[in-house]
Length: 439
Image (cartoon, rainbow, N blue to C red; front, side, top):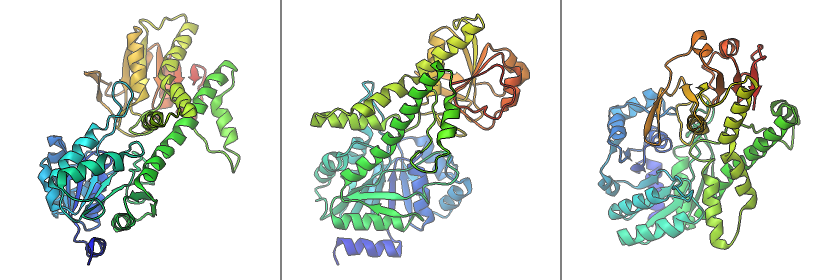
């Protein structure tokens, strides 16, 4: 019958067994959707706590519906393990592990490499392997393929199929989830691409866009997030200029987006956070140097965005000085430490960097975030306020809005704060603006 037709038939009959390596913000929602679509799924994670929670039907990811997880676990369609030998039992493997930066701001692909080595030991003939972790162009073909072939003794394209399909997860997005977000698929060989794309089409309600190679899919993902990085860098730079010119960047953007074509609104803030946008451009600039190429525009935007937490602190000191108050010793309340609105994710959050800089400069900093009661940074646990009130806000010399959570009474804050520095324009609707300062 041939490997391609055999796998296509198994997809149609839903006899494919699925494995997902990494049960984080990408992996768990994907595993849930695979199981809900009728494919028996096994999730793998090195963290025993995650494995235990999944096997108990207990959810820890905001984009997963609690009842969905509980139901598919109870029905036996989803289970989790920390034993990599489960790989020999599955026909489709999605690798969804972190791809952070190291201390030198260079790609750390150790999680991808280690996962590939572990998978290769148990990889069987007739398996599809797909990398979903964001990475530099060339990773699938230059790193994964040799590791999988050497460790398994199998031949890519003949004995197993290998591809790349970048994750597109936007935590907190109320419209687009894993199920209905269009997918891009690139693979090594036409047969591999056809079969892997068919597997995603059997699970998702969205379109699957096929590209000619894994490298194209890898670059596509980098483009998505670098596009945002550059445009946010542009408005962050303009925000600094507008402050000097005594012009509201927020009003400027609102006016510009009235144009029905040729403009997309991006907004300034205290920096960039999350698992993709602050990191992906570094992957591309690192890889570009291999070809003697410098991504000057990208690197410029990265520099601007990376400096925004420091700029935020400088502006805070400027505001305090206008009240004849020094930053050193000042009592500062941060509103929000999550990297974006209405989520509990603080990966790469610029708000945390702002807090760290403030403390290093001698400020007394507390924070309130209705989604994050504590966070770990530089080996320390930082605990937040459980709630805020009129009397709480009055105790501080300045309040800094670093995340635009909607579960905050901004009218109350504006009424009782000595000064508010709103870096996210979260208080746009507040009428009492006498002590309000915008980024």
